[in-house]
Image (cartoon, rainbow, N blue to C red; front, side):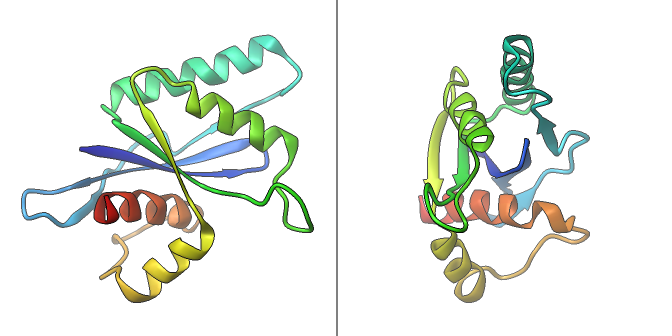
Length: 139
């Protein structure tokens, strides 16, 4: 099983593809594409291009499930309207299921259960990696 951990930030989704290796250990694939940006959320053409890029990414990397780090819907730390459009487009990727993981669950997982982060993990992919790793180990 291959999952793609996602963190949505501003007008982009950050992507980390995670799988279990032959020894049952968490492994992050090194990919050329680690983020997809939505240029203009008011443009139908840009929305379709973003969704098409997600479809192509999921097919190319044989993604079974997208795992999204949730964001608050209201309050000081609430996600913006664009981020929720991106979330919806991820949920509409054909052939893939979508799961949501809370930031609190990810934080607890990182502190108590994660053995180590991959070598040379880019800082901006940390939460996407955690979301994917959590989904693989917690089922």
